[in-house]
Image (cartoon, rainbow, N blue to C red; front, side, top):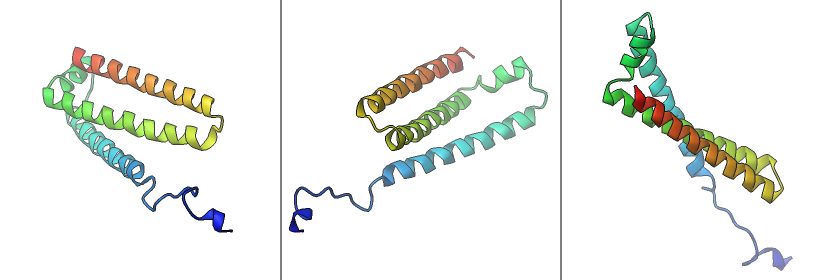
Length: 120
């Protein structure tokens, strides 16, 4: 019975996972604020066609705000998908492969998003 206590015992603190939980909430808050700003900006413009859409993303401040929102979106997605892989995929090799593929996919989405955003 005394073997359960000591250096071989896996101990996790009360704050285990707090950073990820907080990051999920902060990134969701950033996305919510962005959607409100985007919605108000789009609502004021009424009648969105390509020129209005391109004009919306033309100012540097809107590109920066959009990049921040995209960063929050991709980080939010990473935390969520990573937790799904860790909770439901038990074979370590498969889980690692899925995590690497997820990171590569999210990085590709990030590069593609920046490329699209800076073309406008």
